[in-house]
Length: 272
Image (cartoon, rainbow, N blue to C red; front, side, top):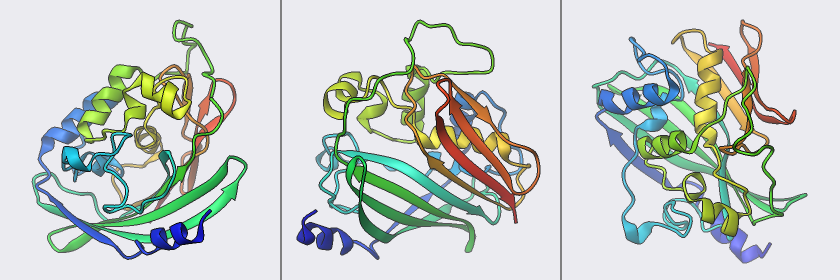
């Protein structure tokens, strides 16, 4: 990796972006419909805030992949693929609906590594979310950038039966989640882009969507908590997966497992 490019990207450490949201109930209601769950009564569960602070991106600022183009807030890493690889959330208190909230996002770290798939760029973003002058959520988000690798094969055919205990995430779910989160990333809705540009066999399921499903299965109510997750293998709209929330207690270890035995996501939940 060219040293000048690394230096340019690392210069983005310390950049900040501030967003506000009046926190209306509609986005949470839409998410509840997608998750096929009821609306929470006493505030937002951890990870549900991802459907807020979702300002639309002007067309001139949209990159080839449908995301906001690199070099505005996120560093101009010279790679084709980007993905939300991991996250850590500390919920001090649930966010309340109908009360204006502020999110301050800060790039904390930019690092480069070389792995089996080639060069990688990791960007860590800290989000501090407050209401009424008090911090309610502290979050660290890790985004990874990499070049397109070898083509990935799908674990099953779309018309294969779904065995008991497993689920798939159909394209209608992915489109709905992309809409409620204002996520324009084409890997979630454009099959041609997935195959031709990224080397994926089909639409990619959002990591945050699966993290929310796993967190909801693991959490104990809305008490203050920490939740951390890491994506370990891709999931497509044809992929059979099952949620394994682990044994009740704190800390609690959970995972999402594909039908081929690969672990797609690992997670830890603990009360604080």
